[in-house]
Length: 130
Image 1 (cartoon, rainbow, N blue to C red):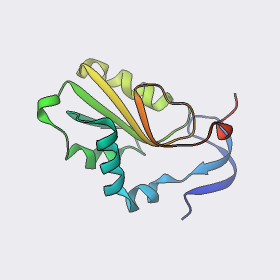
Image 2 (image 1 turned 135 degrees about the vertical axis):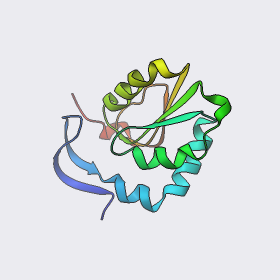
Image 3 (image 1 turned 120 degrees about the horizontal axis):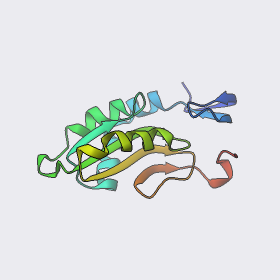
Image 4 (image 1 turned 135 degrees about the horizontal axis):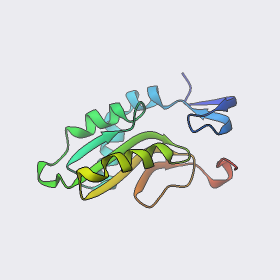
């Protein structure tokens, strides 16, 4: 299966796009490497929350590397960020559970808030138009 499909798509965010990232298989095939990159990009954390569906496999694997000494920090992860809405809702959901929330996504196809670290950022010329 390709990582990128070209066509006309309505994304989970409700936005329309001429391409879609199909990250599931890419993440499964590269899980150990992606987890390594995320861990080194964001630093230590105490717990992990995976945004359903795309972030769940990442979260399950990243949880093995959490530090019980840092329960005040939750790492929120997802596969693809488009508008950031799912990550924002996940951050709000976890806000009362900890002192600090950090985020990471594998692919960002839109601008990322400062609290989210993208592993791969698409060029701004490909960002969705309002």
